Length: 212
Ligand SMILES: C[S@@+](CC[C@H](N)C(=O)[O-])C[C@H]1O[C@@H](n2cnc3c(N)ncnc32)[C@H](O)[C@@H]1O
Image (cartoon, rainbow, N blue to C red):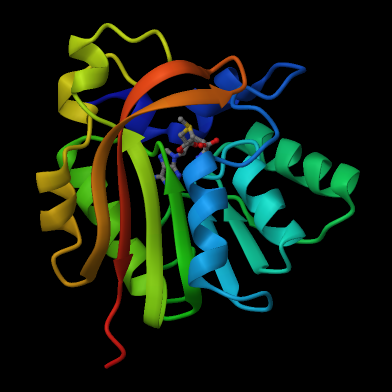
């Protein structure tokens, strides 16, 4: 079924990000900030997929990670560049969707995905491209909303459709080729700009590619 949000995510998110403030704030996602420094060292490479307005990518660059932000929204990429300039850090910015053409396979020590919700086929293709982007031994760090976000009527963000929410079982399947190091369902307190604020039902994943 055609859906402009996924057929042309750049256009859809251009409209969402075309505002003076940052929809999801300027600070990194808490799970990313807590987890990533335990997984990789400064100088190693990070790809932030669907980096939105750059809160995670710019923070990664501040930690000394060699950071690439990939984002299909042009407005998003402009806000990423502006935030990086304000903070005095450098990062590479790719204006595209996540595909093997956009990103060189086997080139990142970590791939970060926060709240990149999509229908099953798009989600699986995107997650496969993320796996291929990893170097041997590289890690995926992911956070997304679960269906409980809808059943609990949380006003703290996320898509309005259950089919777009993530479950631990889905992630176990999508990342079956990796070793799952963390996979938890949690109720967390989001404080991520006006777009994500308040109690939220999320799933959090760390998964590692084998060394072979
Ligand atoms: C809810 S926003 C989250 C933005 C950011 N990750 C954050 O947490 O602040 C979803 C993001 O996914 C991006 N996105 C959607 N489809 C994508 C795709 N196929 N490849 C890469 N990014 C995509 C959108 O452009 C948007 O920036």
